[in-house]
Length: 417
Image (cartoon, rainbow, N blue to C red; front, top):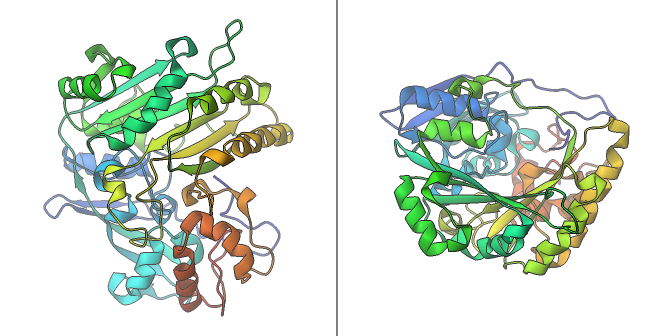
């Protein structure tokens, strides 16, 4: 989300893991070793080669690298059932600043804790291999995509979604996406697209929605039954391509974009969603959208200190704000300023003290390390937003494992040695 894999104003070294992408699946033990340069799509594809009823909690973008995703926690469609990706990592191999290769036993539990949600690769060493605990998925799952336009009470339905999506059974994940509505005379409002994964058959899902989310007006014709691996392709927003598309690292369209994030603890009033309409109607809002990712279920169970990722119980959903452009990069600032204005608009309705953020949606607006990378006070500005009180433990681990701060970027964990 930010270009933190390089530091342009000083001599730097980039460790390229692109060719470390093997995935070794053991169906009998329900585990897999995946190298740090593999993508999420490659991981899911290789698991599916061995089993139709095993998977792993990943996000919806198949070209994301596993190393960055795991080390930031990693939420996605299976998180309400099985927790984060980081919650399902059982071992790792890391090269420390001294060139030593450490596994979970030799690195110790504090460092193993830190790399599962603390941005491990950019702060503590090079994690080149991860051991995963695979999870059960049914042979048939159900998906749907339903869009509600302004004239179909989109703002009322997304307002209601806030009360329902985090409370549904852990087999049910309904993502809400808010883009700009199609222009119509006198209409300045948002539309909402709901995309769902249900770990079961469509009849059960329709029945569940009739009882718990009737406002959606879901019918069986909206639902598609498929295998788990096809649902991964579906959420990557491909429809007719074979599952091999998950191995294609260039399949997604590349564009310039900016992302910010928030956490929501109490349902937001409908008037707030209505108030977004005029903003999305602006020129710079044409390519913007918000993803509302429901939490609850398993995400409520683990304590905040289980991993560095602290956004557990008490958060009903997270928000990803994204904006892009189709013009020359020289015009990017006006789109970014639009995004910042939307983010400011949401200030009163999201988490506070700190206003929390998701580390996998890195955002340099909330603070950067200056040339004194050991400045704890400066780093804590963004550190407590990403990690809350876990930031203090991350600093202690960093100070022990990399006291001279060899592994660093603009938002890396500082050493206080």
